[in-house]
Length: 180
Image (cartoon, rainbow, N blue to C red):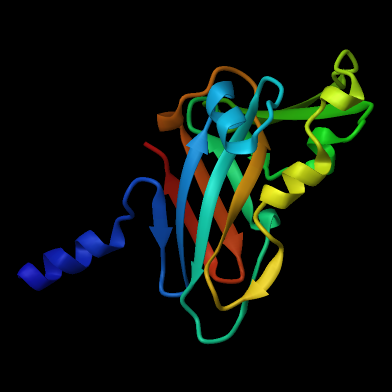
């Protein structure tokens, strides 16, 4: 019976961790602008969230690891954000698209898309350097070895660590990680 309980305990991921037989993930989320500045060495605008992620493949063959495999989810309002590439943050974009899907009790859902001007008040030299963000980002690579890096997300509103979860959908399967 003790063996059955131990096996059941192994199935439940620890906070800030997730894994299966193919891959292990460990992460830390940074919401506060001071924490983000300490991790990055620069500030990001309001709504940006940074996740430091460590990916450890458990398979014998090499596996493709990419920021595209990750989505940040707010359990508070269901908002989702795919990982952003550095040019979407530090580049001179003209518009920012934000979508939000809402669900009603009748099972009907609606998606709205807001188009807002990019922060053109910030001078280009004050924007985070795309090269700096790229140097710290989770590498897009095929590997058998553990890799670590940052993922960048954009969510509206005031978010708390306990309300966020990270979803992984990639070649090693599907995983969900809760933050505490």
